[in-house]
View 1 (cartoon, chains in turn green, purple):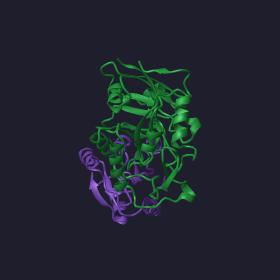
View 2 (cartoon, chains in turn yellow, brown; view 1 turned 90 degrees about the horizontal axis):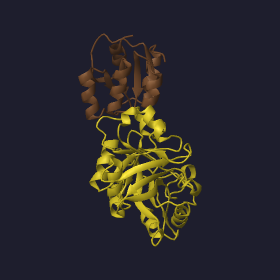
View 3 (cartoon, chains in turn brown, orange; view 1 turned 60 degrees about the vertical axis):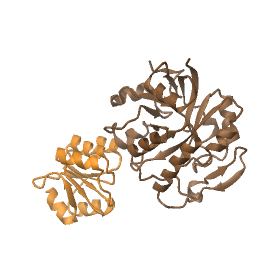
Amino acid sequence: MAAKYTADLHIHTLLSPCAEIEMIPPLIVAQAVEIGLDLIAITDHNSAENVRAVMGAAAGSPLKVLPGLEVESVEGVHVICLFDKPEDAESMQELVYTSLPNLPNQSDKLGEQMVVTAEAEFVRYNERLLLASTMLSIDQIVDAAVERSGIAVPAHVDRRGYGLYGVLGFWPEGLNCSAVEISRRATAESIRQSHPDLGGRAIISSSDAHMLMDIGLCRTTFQLERRSVGELRLAFEGKDGRSVEGCVTPSTVGADSEA
Amino acid sequence: MELQTLAKELNLVQVAGLKDGVEVTGGYTSDLMSDVLGQAKKGDVWITNQKHLNVIAVASLLGLSGVIIAGGMKPDENALEKAQQENVNVFVTDLSAFEVVGRLYSLGVRG
């Protein structure tokens, strides 16, 4: 039987240089639980090195954490890649690492990229420049995620910067994604109106939180049997009783119905 | 001015489209398709580092005189195919977009 779950599928930790230092596993989990989220995904820029820590911090809590990453395509579009197992996210990370420019992070200009434990103990700095585009096209990112039993969702498609519609203008022919994510500035209704080429694809909304108070600022409610990638895939396609129920963004009053 | 004349002056390599009789009436440079869709004009030659399929679609949609893919970038296979099918004039160059725009401007092309 499917049940209602509320999710925020785009959250950064302090591994992303642009994220606040407060984005440590115990506080992310605590905040998510506090505001009533059932499911979150950890999606740092081009890396998954903190996913196990957040999953660990959530052990024993009612919160489910999916390991993921936010990959930047060669075109400059951000794509959220979500997985069930940390090993699959790490495999995606390995591909991404081979595809990033071989440059070091400039922490004084961009911020620190910190790898931590579930208890927020410092492990090391990630020295690689993560705020960069890979050489992977959007198609390649989507295919790679699927090959690793994951799912890819173009992130904040309404955004001019790094959003699919801003960068590519319209839906690229042949791109195989069943859902897109909108930012806090859009509503499901507004994006369907301005981009009819979205067709029947599902729309989700997530916070892209870089600070604690933004967690759950945008959220999506789903009908799922379990909190897993497979269930999300079914929900995006509206199959077998699973569905995307609605998006809640600051622009909406209550949930935007997807019906 | 003639696209071919400009291409010759800048040593651009043509990878798709017509060889003759293409008139360039202006120029535009941007890597964001949403920006090009809103701002570029028919007859403009467009300089970009982007190499994906939508570049060709946008150029065709707007009736641009040509696309110069700069910075050593090479069009994606599906982009090249579409350009050849639709006769979109596409050039590649190792010159940076900045260099290309500067040289076109000195040859009289205006935004």
